[in-house]
Length: 171
Image 1 (cartoon, helix red, strand yellow):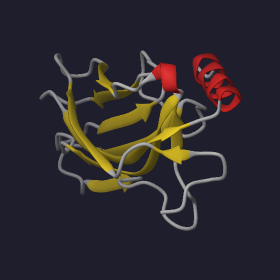
Image 2: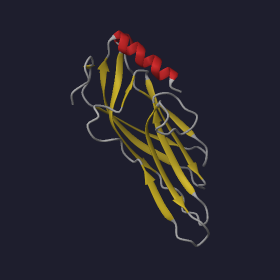
Image 3: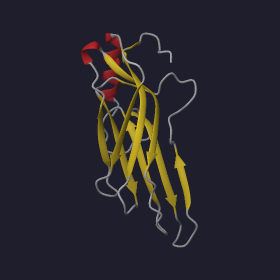
Image 4: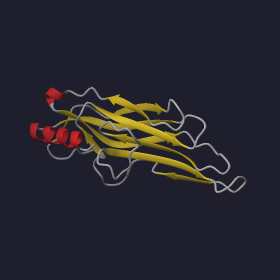
């Protein structure tokens, strides 16, 4: 994959796998994923693709349930959405039930990263990224598994400074 102008690869393709799990049902859980980047060499991590797999929401008659998951470049206290500048991946599943005994429908949104002619999804200049999950209306704790595909790159000093500042200000 061709890198954007001004970036130099410092690794081959890297796949980072992880899991984030609620400790109590219905409570936001977060996980920090360390990238061990070399800040002295202005190293960053370029994200090419993301996959995620969520635990299914509980099917409870008459109760709307769901599971929400996001990956972000900076720490969050809640699950984000794509309108947040620091979020580069979301995945949501929900079950809607209007009344006990009624038909339950299932909805799934955003399981994989954007595809197409984009050269990358995100560039992470700080030393880690973050995963968030929360279940809504469930009785059982929920989890999400994910894979992030990317590559270490070296930036110019100006690029690195601009990206670090942008990440830290995009809360």
